[in-house]
Image 1 (cartoon, rainbow, N blue to C red):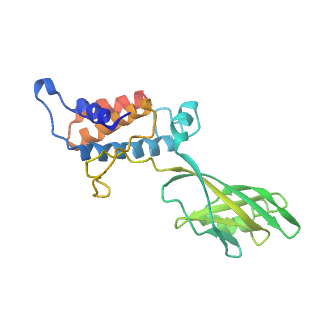
Image 2: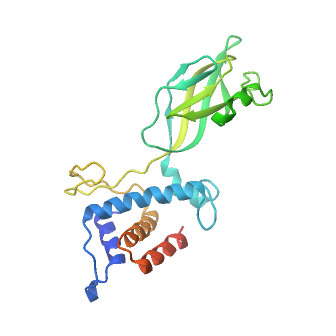
Image 3: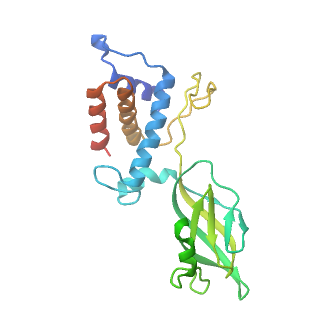
Length: 234
């Protein structure tokens, strides 16, 4: 959907032009609200905080809507004895999905796919001592943690990590309108950047955007109507 259509749709939901009952919104305000609407909607539906309580892969609707954001990146790992830690982290990271690891040891030079569970930093000491949960090259299992924008893959000195792939949901691409100041950077955009999502989902973002802006201008009736529209089409 073109950004010009988004501007028209958002403003038409907030203004009553025929009766001259309207607010003057700058284009950059609509851009900011729409980009916030994208992130708010993604966070809510990745977590399942919606009417149906569905998370990111609990229905084909969620898979269809969110698969656009699911991506991978290769992590550069450094050996810190008990674990390997990544030295790079994606700048557009939004939410964790899974980690894929290939490893080898002195007895097996061919890389082996490991099953990696995401653990909690608070439980690292217990996980390393638990015979059922500690890293095991023989069973092809280990655990990983995340902290300070880094991934830690624990080995307990049993094996060497040779490849680590982080699967994650990235931040949505922010829309921009040529000639309008980007509220996030303060720089005037030179080209249009349209929403990357399919049109039916953009329509939901438009309602979410109108809800945010209605709240900003303290229009409770419009905010409630747009909030209900978002959930009805979710």
